[in-house]
Image 1: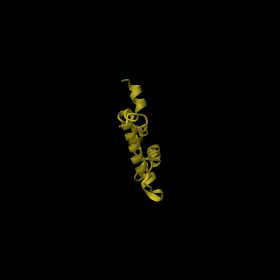
Image 2: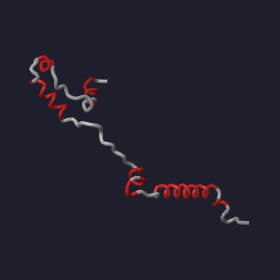
Image 3: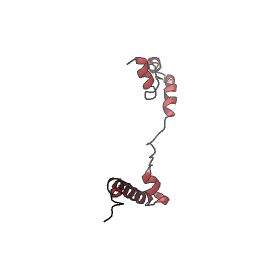
Image 4: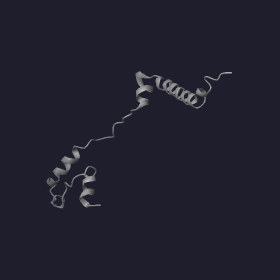
Length: 97
C-alpha cells in the first residue's frame, strides 16, 4: 500500500501535527498556542447518547404503542398462509371430497 493512500485514509483520524519540536523546546510556552487552540475547540465531556430506532420510536416516551408487535404477528401469519397456500392448499381447492 502506498504511503500517500494510507495518509489520506487516516487523515480524518489522526490530528494534524501542530506541535513541532521547535515549539516544544522554546521553553516560553507561547509557541504552544496553536496546540491549545486546536484542543480547546474539541467537545468536552461524555458523548451524547443517541437512542434511536424502533425502540425509541414506538416503545419509549409519549408515542408508546404495540403497533410493531401486531404488524409483525400479522405479517408472519400472512406470509405463512401464502407459503402454505402455494405448497399445499391450491392443489386441493377444486378437488374437495
